[in-house]
Length: 232
Image (cartoon, rainbow, N blue to C red; front, top):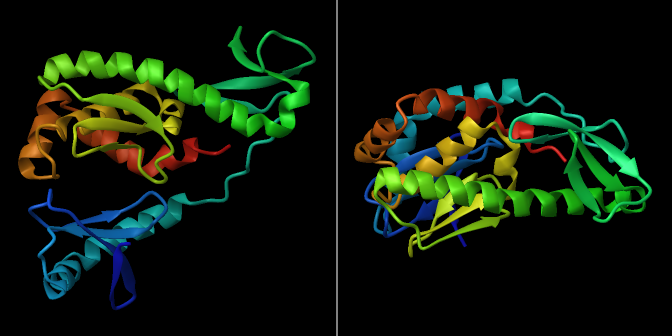
């Protein structure tokens, strides 16, 4: 279980990892505050780091608060729009078809009798299609970056779009394929570069930039708008 650290009115989840060499602050998609560091870093070192970065933290929190306008949840009725790779597709409830859910002729077609379980069916559909689409792009980018992940899996990752495990496996959130393709590719490149550099060091970002020169624009868009694509 991770510890917490409170500095004035800011409370951070503390994550320690032997893979980390430096201290880093993350303001997650939902505004959660995380401070990460090596296993032996002292609490007072983390506290001083937070105080040095307080203005940056408050700025990020203000940005996220401004963007967190109420978002209407989806209804599984004909005409509702659901995203896939950055495009919105209208839902059509049908009385009969050979599969529970399919994307056909620009529409998601769902059996009317399964509408009450629509979210489960859609998440399953996204997960299956994400695996195929992302694995193909991972192969392409792996060749360019000179790395080979041990596996590629689709999971529920909470507030993370992707993760890289200690054994070189890559995990991606099923909701990643709701984003435009250019953003999905940024997530893929980000995780693949972790096979070279475990932490977000200057060398890490240099490798990302060499592979994707406009990564900063993609990263900023994802931080500001990505969460709005995960509404089901």
